[in-house]
Image (cartoon, rainbow, N blue to C red):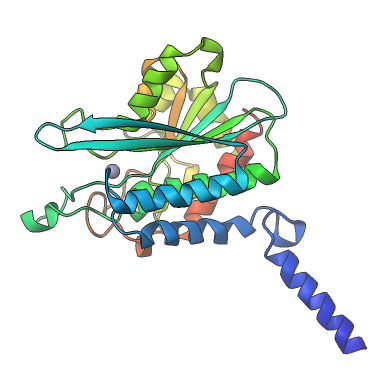
Length: 305
Ligand SMILES: [Zn+2]
């Protein structure tokens, strides 16, 4: 009898330990495993350039997670043609979470496409092949997917839109064929009623690096310094050393199209990643701890936005 009741207690303890967000799992700690499993699934599809069957598989995965957790799923389908290339169909996917209030929504975005070529490789042959993008494309997507589960369990005060952008990394260096999805999204916003615009935009990109150091990016600091301040406060509270860095780098990313239409926007990113745009941007360069640091800081900061 004693042995049996011990077993019952043990089984209960194990069950509770694996539930995300419970006291027994140390608050959010259960999400670390969830984040990593998302990144493993994302990378298992292989390189995911715009228009590829692998990207369509990832869309299926995002939709199935959205069906489990989001209040609504919206999609924007559009086409894009790079000079000398065939027309490609692109899709932005938006998971909508109704808030307790009807305030303007917070938009958290990440690109889910990966680069169609590896232009930082040395050999011309390797340069032509698409990258897996565990960090560049994978990590932000994993954070947003885990956030969907969190927002389902913790209804936010302000409505939240998690937007997975297509075509961020499609262009050759120096071209304007970047941020296709976020540019399309921002152009649609311009046609809408001003009241439907996001309160602010937070882009998450390249946050999986084992040696994660989130930079204070210049455009973000100029246009949404208050947002970076809230994030910095959460990082200090949670002792997330990955965030406590001086200002560095000016990065063009999915936050720019929003800044250009007057919506405050910032990017969280570690741009010092030696495997950037190479075939070495793989799962083994990333860590669950890095993903979790970003996830927990953003989730904490969200409560104050
Ligand atoms: Zn990239």
